[in-house]
Image (cartoon, rainbow, N blue to C red; front, side, top):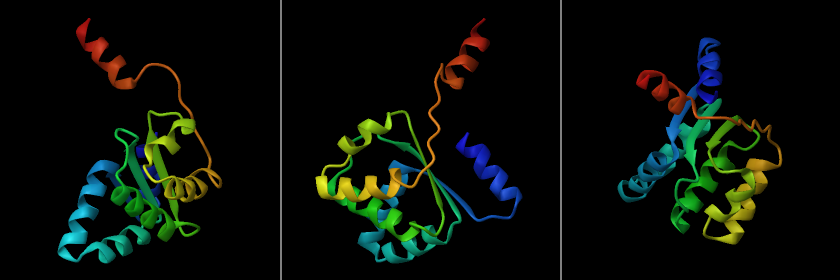
Length: 133
């Protein structure tokens, strides 16, 4: 669904970025080492729509939590951030190792948001069972 929203935005000539969150966090970590971190944040902030997929696969380290807060803070009130997760929102707080950062992140991500909670089987699972018949 998020990709469909992103595609629609692209068709309207809106700047859209898509990242799997673990890969983005790895790239930001590399940015700390090679000096490109601030430039990466600026590029992410310029996207009108930023889609972050796979939130909550693993608990975030303190560095990852701080990096995600930087991304979200730079975008707050300036663009739309779509976060995709298989975890219920009630479990998100537990994925951030530092409670203070968790509070700040959840405040920016959850309190001024629209939530779409989907139910039913994964479309990947459904498509796989259709091929197996």
